[in-house]
Length: 363
Ligand SMILES: Cc1cc2nc3c(=O)[nH]c(=O)nc-3n(C[C@H](O)[C@H](O)[C@H](O)COP(=O)(O)OP(=O)(O)OC[C@H]3O[C@@H](n4cnc5c(N)ncnc54)[C@H](O)[C@@H]3O)c2cc1C
Image (tube, rainbow, N blue to C red):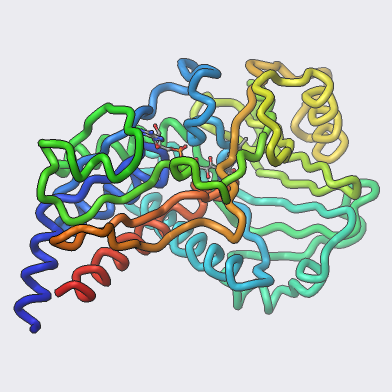
């Protein structure tokens, strides 16, 4: 029995196809090659300098992100699972920086500041002891005197920001350096991979397609952003009473700062609304005036729209056995909504566990 399981595990390791070259697919592919799997990433879109990404790639979410890590105090099982994934990713980023990869990867650790006008109970309950238990680093509740007008609750903690396309290109480079293969192709469905001559006989395909190939539970959540040339040395998140948000996410490495971000589930409009941009910049200036030294104004580089792959019930990270003989698995890892970067290494680890689980189940 044991031998049989090992045989199946080795067979699975022979070749895995990961669909998708967003942050989730590349992190997953890289983790698998590091674990000794032979992997090909097949995708329609691959990382490129952000300046070259255009609206026709709106369904490739990864370039449009901020991207920062913003912990959410978990209140249900889905949020607890995401929180665990975020913590695992946070530790991974700490290791990268410790190994001197900070600039190559486009990562910066900094203070994350949160302001909430009408705080939900989970925020009010977030004492320093509770935050430490949840794994926040250097968490501190802000005093009333430190809060901007109309804000009731504030806190700061240590976090990281990424320059998304620098980071994804770094991952892809490392994937290729370790022997990972790359193929550019548009697929009609994930099962198509099993029938491609070059992949005939493979036991598992991993679906990191972001939106999940027409999964009706996935709803694009429109996010409008303004990219400004101004630098900022903290990342700010403000939740307003009227349900709007403002964030400032320094991309670093000459990428300026991302000011966002609207949250508009189901809205497909790809054209930025100048009024929304103006409102976000105004709100940021009131919240964090230090971003504009005396006499300076925002220097807008680009107004853009992205689509977060938001999934009802949370991300889909599970495997299904495809109905064939011999057994083949389709591992799903998509629907990360607004948290794909901050949960990426947690998802990658979960995919590896699912592949081991599959080997055990069929062994
Ligand atoms: C405005 C905005 C701000 C955000 N800010 C943050 C943030 O601060 N922090 C954070 O953690 N997250 C943030 N996000 C969310 C984050 O960007 C996403 O969760 C993440 O990029 C999803 O990555 P992914 O790899 O799952 O999908 P994607 O990046 O969409 O990649 C999907 C991949 O699958 C491929 N693919 C899809 N369909 C096919 C097909 N038919 N054939 C072949 N290939 C296919 C695509 O080509 C692509 O390579 C933000 C998102 C937006 C829009």
